Length: 183
Image (cartoon, rainbow, N blue to C red; front, side, top):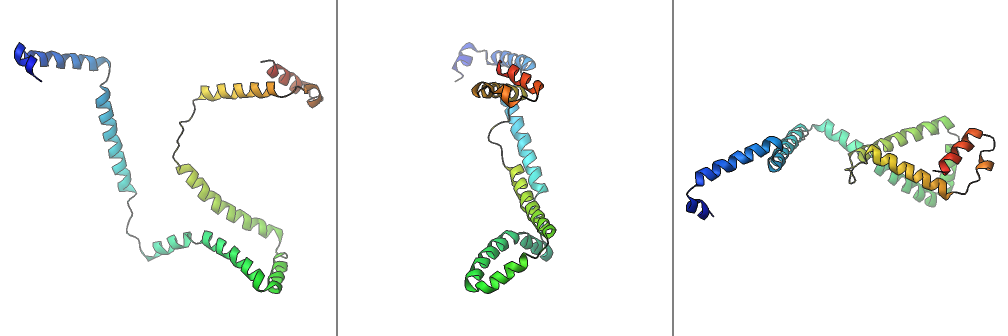
């Protein structure tokens, strides 16, 4: 390395010309390596800022109590259901009496209980669904339109054409399906 520079005795001139050519090329097209370095630096800064924002603050006894209570519903529901099975086997008469009493609970109260449980677990599921990383990049709008049109046309061609019977009472739908089938 450097033998040719020493041989030609033009290392300063070669370096100057090389730097000028690089600078001229970067005017028209950015340096991809430098762009990757800058992107990585920005990503590292964003991660460190986010880490500082979400660092665990020291918690008091009340925070610990609330975190513990937030973890209770699922285990309690599971263990309570298993306890009902055990109770039904140990004392069937008492279990039957209590189930008859549950039958006396008004229906709106059951709906309210179902809504509360559904919203609790639904919110948890929605939270985990939102933070799940995407593995497949989202399709562009034109790809989606093309796939939808292709799938729709294939489905219409694949189905037998009882258009006359299916939409006998609606001429507009019958004509629309017939026009889509001919595509």
